[in-house]
Length: 98
Image 1 (cartoon, helix red, strand yellow):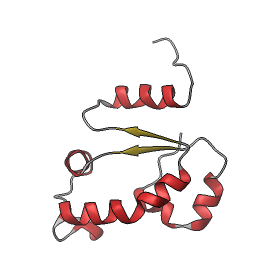
Image 2 (tube, rainbow, N blue to C red):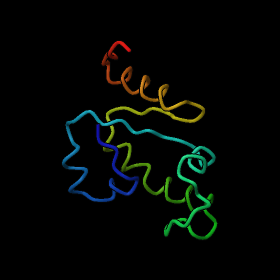
Image 3 (cartoon, rainbow, N blue to C red):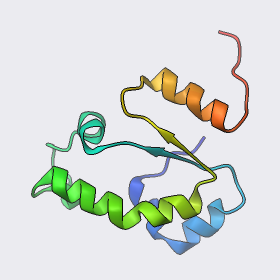
């Protein structure tokens, strides 16, 4: 599994490398992003007004995420294990016994 940063889809070469492969867009709202990424921390693209800026970046990239992804999983309100299970489900893969 590869989890590139959100800006990876901005590069046409990266999108070309992902084409034809199983790519899952893990989407989330601004509140979930704030909890996961710490929008209150020093992040160059989010330094001023992090929540509105996050929405602006997410909306600007949405079509690129959709282009690159073969599936989408919403992560809001889910634990990492639940997200992993949802990714496996959407890719029609099975989990290993624990």
